[in-house]
Structure formats: C-alpha cells, structure tokens
Image 1 (cartoon, rainbow, N blue to C red):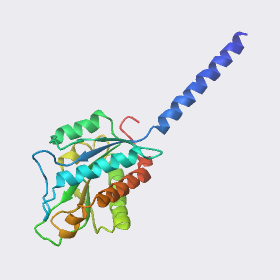
Image 2: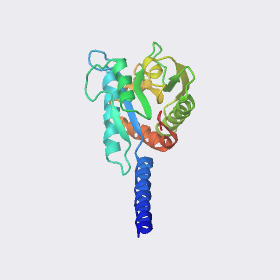
Image 3: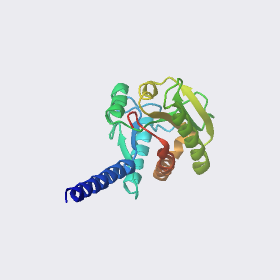
Image 4: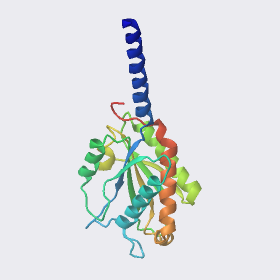
Length: 219
C-alpha cells in the first residue's frame, strides 16, 4: 500500500511539474516599447509641424491595441502612455525591472537634406550576449518595413545611444528611426491614421515572427 501511495504521489508531482514547465514555455515574451521623447521634448518637427513625440506615441498605442486584439498577444509595456517626459535612465530601468526579453525604442528621423528618406535600425556598437539577436531582429525589421510598406531601407547601423547601452547587458535591444519628418512625403504620411495603423501592424507582425528565439538573462 505504501509503495502504491508513493507511486501515486510521484505521478501527481510529475504531472504538476509538466504543467508548470508547460506554463513557463508558453509564457508570452515580454517587450518594452520605448516611446521616444515626450512632454517638453518634442523630438523632430516635420515640415508640416507634425512632432516626433506624437507620431511615435500614436504608433505605440496602435501596437498595443492590435496586440490586445490578437489571439496570442505578446506581453507589451510602454515607457510612456501619454505626452509625458521620461528620463532615459528611467526608460531602461523599467526594462530591467520587468526582466524584458526585448527593448524597442521608437523614433522618427530628421535631416537638413529634405530628400533624405527611409528607415534606419540601430543596435549597440559593442559586443554582448544579446548582440547577435539584436542585429538579427534589426535586419528583419528593416526588411519587413521595406517589403510591406515600401519604406526605403537605409540599413542596420551601430551607435552608442544611451537606451541601447543601458539595456543590451540584460536583453536584446534595437532603436527604430521610422522615416524622416523633414521629408515632405514621409511627414505627410504620418498625418493619416491608416498609416499609423499600418506601421504598428508591420512592427507587431515582425516582433511576433521573430520573438521565439529570444531569451532573458536567467532563463
């Protein structure tokens, strides 16, 4: 009888462990979307007066809405949900506190050359255990945005931006420059709600497609 109870207890424990590990492996990946600028920091200002801080907030909120409507939503957090100014350090600390799998910083570009146009994706310019994953995602994002929306691909670039420097040690991170507000065509593009939704959809699709290979420190 004791052996029977022992075997039953082992089976129950084994089933519980299988359920637990099954839940862990099915946990949605956690992404922090850093919404650039905000508050008194408008960021780039377009030729039509459109402001970078508003464009990226609109895109981020559209990503959230689309994600919440998905059958398999990702675990997404924003660094700001309204028109407020958040310090760069607080943005990266949020990603660390949440143990994010990925940090994606949204921005728009500006140039003295009114003909400059297209998408740039930045990764940190130093090695880390997450460098390869970050570079891979950067290439996938710029290719997807070119294919789906027709934005010119200006390539994947390396930089020492603070938000990348302070996140790359514990998660993959990229910074997106989503077109030039100094370019009349791209600036006007973001005045249209359907353009915001299209950009959000393509970014979310790309994240969903590529997140399976990501890991967190401690996983």
